[in-house]
Image: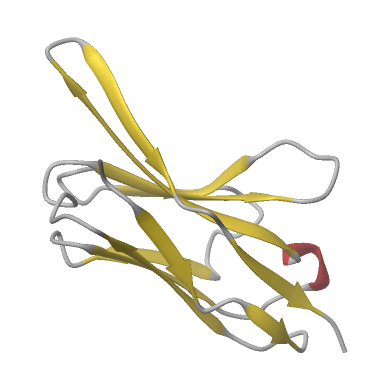
Length: 118
């Protein structure tokens, strides 16, 4: 069973930066698509950044140009968050998935909280 563990969350002022890391218990990111989601209390989990196995990335409109997803294609995924805004406050979750013989395999981290406030 693969475990994903996020770290790097915390309190930051508007305009500041944070770097979230997601470490996997196994070397999987060379064959799994990866993504970062976020969720506010009472809200749905929403994808903010995604990277395919080949490295193609996409971002939600709300973070495009400010957030960057990257992976070492082994066991770590990073979300670099710049120019943070109060509306970026949320719990952030790492996600990995692939399809094996037609069956999806997916893993979630436990989340790390980000608060953007002055």
